[in-house]
Each structure stands twice: as structure tokens, then as C-alpha cells.
Image (cartoon, rainbow over the protein chains, first blue to last red):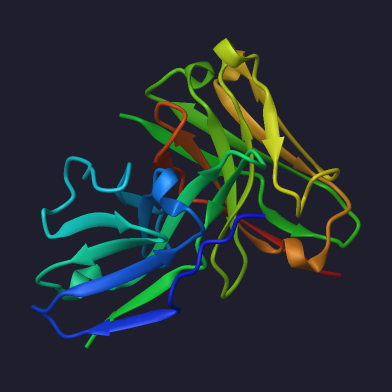
Length: 108
Length: 120
């Protein structure tokens, strides 16, 4: 089955840039979506189709992809960005949605 | 306003079964692919399964981890989605979310989730 690998945690100081990676075999051939999940709340999509940003999501959030890695970048991090972040792809070989293990973003 | 509201969670004994409901408002459920996702305590998001839209005959796809124990169904008249899970194990303890796919892709709407606890 397809596996997406994320670092368990990323820490960043306010005002700095956070980068969260998502590794997967041939991920460059798949569309990657990113979700923000705060405790007790519903997940929210922050990036879809690799780099598109939904309305209402700050421009500080951006996505990129190269080779076997997708990256969510959060610029000028603020305390409110503290959450768990998940990448997601559709595995067409198994007809399954796959989530990465999630990355806990801590704002120092 | 688009909204998804899950219900039906609670305490269930091992070996039992559950039926969760997801009531949709603000849009027509049958137009969309719909999914169930869960999060066990201290764990990440886990996709459980999907029901395609009416145009695709509501075909379902299920995760290997629950296949054989799970059924996703709909009631068009109630604009609702359901999750049936049987032979429950303690590992099925989780918050269960329903979500809507936009254009059979990104999950653009999520409910607040309903907690299921499997314990004797």
C-alpha cells in the first residue's frame, strides 16, 4: 500500500518560516492536498492540488512538490498556526485515499 | 451554509456494531463523493471509506483495515450519509468524521466529528 511520510514534529519561532515535508514514491505524479487540524475542531484544507490555496487561507501558506517530496511552507508563522498538518493523496492502484502520519507544528 | 453534522457516537462493547449518521445541509449530498475518516486517540487521520456520487452509482471503496466490517450507505430523502461498522474492536475507538469531496478530490467540508468508544 502507498505510504506518505511526514516528520512527527516541526518547531518554529514566531515570524519565521515552517516547512513540513511529505514524502512518497512518485508523489510528483499525484495531486497532494494539505489539511490543518486543530484539537477539537474539524480539519481544514489549506492547500489543494499541490499548490492551490482555498479562499480564506492566508497567502502565508504555500505548497510545492519536487521529485518524491511535497512541502507545505508557512511563512511568517503566528501562534494561531499551531496545529497538526496532514498531507493526502489518492492512490489509484488501490483506490484508497492515503493520509500522511501528520506533523505537529509547534510555535515556540 | 454548507454543514455536515455527525451523530450516533457513544460507548459500544467489543464485538458490537455501530451506525453513525452524517446529516448534510446547504448542498445536495447525492451530487458529491463522500467519505468517512477517523482519528484514534493520539493518532493521525485514517481514511475509512468513500461513497461515490449518484452519477457514479454510489459505488463504495473501503480501507483495507476495515474492509469486510464496514458499509457506507446513503438516504437521499434525508440528505444523509451513514457508516455501519461491525465486529467492533477496542482499536476502533476514535473520533469519526464525515467529509465532502469537491470534484471527486479534495475534502473541502468536514463535520465536527462524533466520538466512538469501544470498551467493556
